[in-house]
Image 1 (cartoon, rainbow, N blue to C red):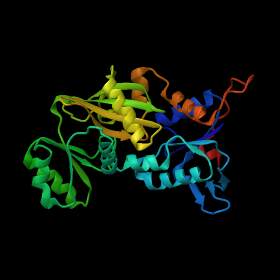
Image 2 (image 1 turned 120 degrees about the vertical axis):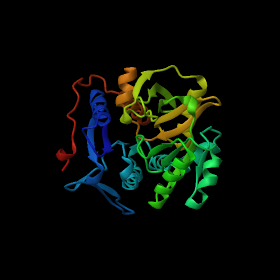
Image 3 (image 1 turned 30 degrees about the vertical axis):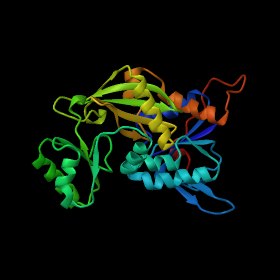
Image 4 (image 1 turned 45 degrees about the horizontal axis):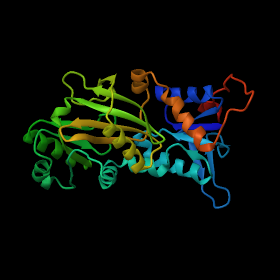
Length: 313
C-alpha cells in the first residue's frame, strides 16, 4: 500500500518509527509536510497537491500527526483526503474534537466519564467564584491551546491563582481552572489505545520540584499494571471522540481514575522505550486490518524505499 504520514518534522522519533514500521511491512511510505500540501476543491475532480504539483490522490491511507499550531489546516487537509476516498487513521472530525479541550471534556462527561472538577469562564470578574467552584487553592490553570505540559500552571494559593488567571485573561487567552488532585503525587498514566484496544500503558512521574509528569517536562516513565476500570475508561474515551489512535492520560484519585486528556497525536518514544512494544507497527497493522490488506505470497522481504518530502517535489 501507499501510506502518507501527514506531519511537520520528519526527524521526530515518532515520525521516523512510523515510516520505518510501514517500510518493514512492505508498504511505500511517504512523508508529507503539511505546509507543502494544498488542495483543489472541485465537485468533479477534487485533488490534493504536493509541492511541485504532484497529485496525492493515489494514496491508500494517510496517518495525520498534526501539531497543535497546524490544527486548522491539518484537519482541512485530512478532510480533503477523506473526500477522495483515502482512509485516515484518525479522522478530521475526531482530531478537531480532541484538540478543543473544553468541547472534548464536555463530550467525555456526557458519556459518563469522570474528570477532575473543572471551571471555565470568559470574564476575569468571575475569578473568585471560579476558584471556589473547583475547591479552592491549590488548583491547576490550563491554557486551552497548551500541549506537552506547556501552558499548565499550579497555583498553590488563592492569591497566586487570582494572579495567574488575571494574567492569562488579560492576554485574551482561553483557560480552564481544574482541581488539584494531591494524592496523584506528581504521577499520571498514559494508556495508548489503537483500534479500541489498550495496547500499552506506562506511568509518568514528574521530575523533583515539578508537578507535571510529561516526558517533555523532564518526567520519567515506567511500566505499570493498569486496572480493568482504567482500561475501560481509556477505551471509552477514545471511542467517544472517534479516535482510532489515542494517548489517554489518567490520574489515580481517592474517587477512582480520573480522565485528564485525550491526545490524537500521542508520542511514541516514551511508551516504546518504557514497554519495549512496537507501537508504530501496531498503528500500521490497524490500517492493514481496516483496508483488508495482506502481504502477497512470495513478496520480497526487502522494504521499498521511503520517500521524504524533498523527493516528492
